[in-house]
Length: 83
Image 1 (tube, rainbow, N blue to C red):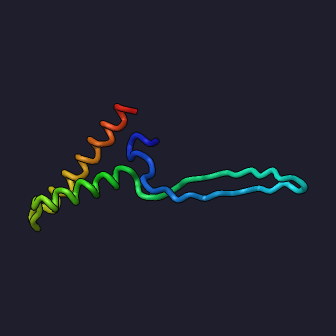
Image 2: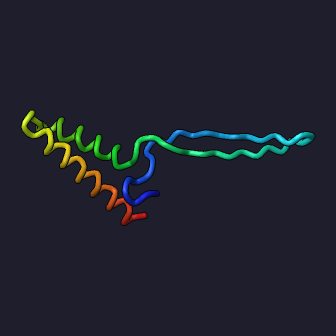
Image 3: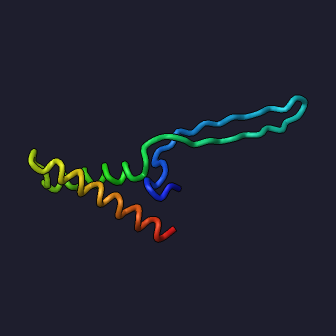
């Protein structure tokens, strides 16, 4: 997991299965990649909460984004401390 963005919150999953001739043996590789970062997910949730609490006006749009980013960063710090 990346310490900067928390890794993927919703990665795409791809599976590759190889069949070997004459046997029932199968080998599967599962890959996950891309998707929204965990930091982006936390920031979106924080922004949703701030907006629902009435902490928004046209003059404070930048403040809401900064606060949501700070909350997301704090969440990743807390999760990192517990893992």
